[in-house]
Amino acid sequence: MQLEELINKINKSLDELDLVTARKYIEENIELLNKNKALLNSNARALLEFLTDNQKSDVKPLTRQEMSTINSINIYALRFDIRGLKLLIKDKANLLSRKDVVQYLNSDAKTILSGMGVIEKKDQQ
Image (cartoon, rainbow, N blue to C red):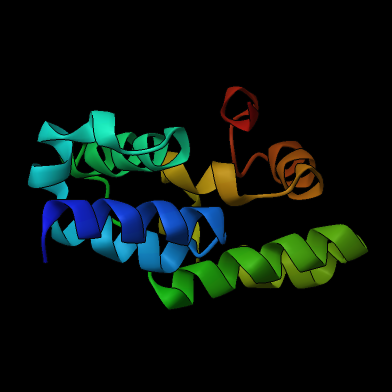
């Protein structure tokens, strides 16, 4: 794929809010795009910087199961189901100790989990 064609596909994908396709194109050609980032529109440049930073920081991406657990935590917190929340997080200490997980929690979950002492209050921000 030529550079011009790649840039057009990424920009078009982001204009259509197709982040999955844009991310796929960027990840496959990240080195080439870093050299020619001026040709990308602002949204594409922001996504490129985000993906580059994630690669450099060696952040392990969340698995489907972990994302499902986080989603369940958010739902229990939204419904204020403390019993269900306690049962769910009982065996998930490793997941909740990761710093990058807190950003996926909704405000209800952050408040309840910090009140329970599962996450630190400074992690909420």
